[in-house]
Amino acid sequence: MDFEIDSFNASFKREIKGIILDFDDFIAFEHGKILPENFELIKKLSSKGIKFAILSNGNDLARFENLRDFVSVVSGVKAKPSKESFEKAIVALGFSKRNVIMMGDNYLTDGGCISAGIDFVHIEPIYFSGLHFLKKIKKTPYRLIKRFFVLWAKLCNKIFF
Image (cartoon, rainbow, N blue to C red; front, side):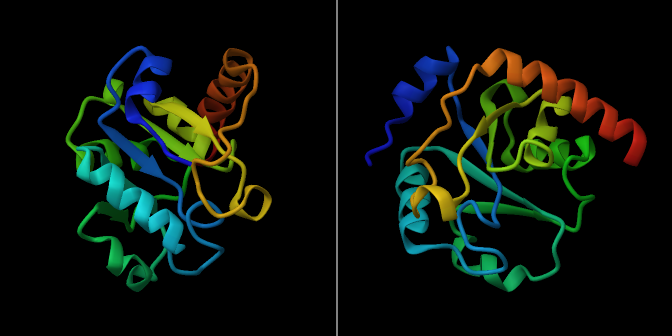
């Protein structure tokens, strides 16, 4: 699949300059290294000026080494859905949150970005959709889901963080 950022910008009605990525079961299998197809896609989009950040509370940073030229790794932070962690990823990207989106496979953790004012794009986990992380953007009633997860993210932040 050829992913064109211009069509994505048109969907959001603004310029997307930065993308926060989930890692496990999204661009790599659980606790593994990034899949070659996803590495090539990130490399391609980086050459077009898109900046990426991976948000990880894990300690195994060696698996991100081959990404360091293309991706900021934000690690040692509170686990998602912590609003504070998403805000650190925004700082790492260096853009306004208006120009940043979060892409991930988990509404409960990755969707916590909504509490930080970042739009969330849900994509099926790689074990359901194949290997390419942009292959299957979930088609759902976006506003209804967003409202639910905005409330959920706010509730989780008050309870756990």
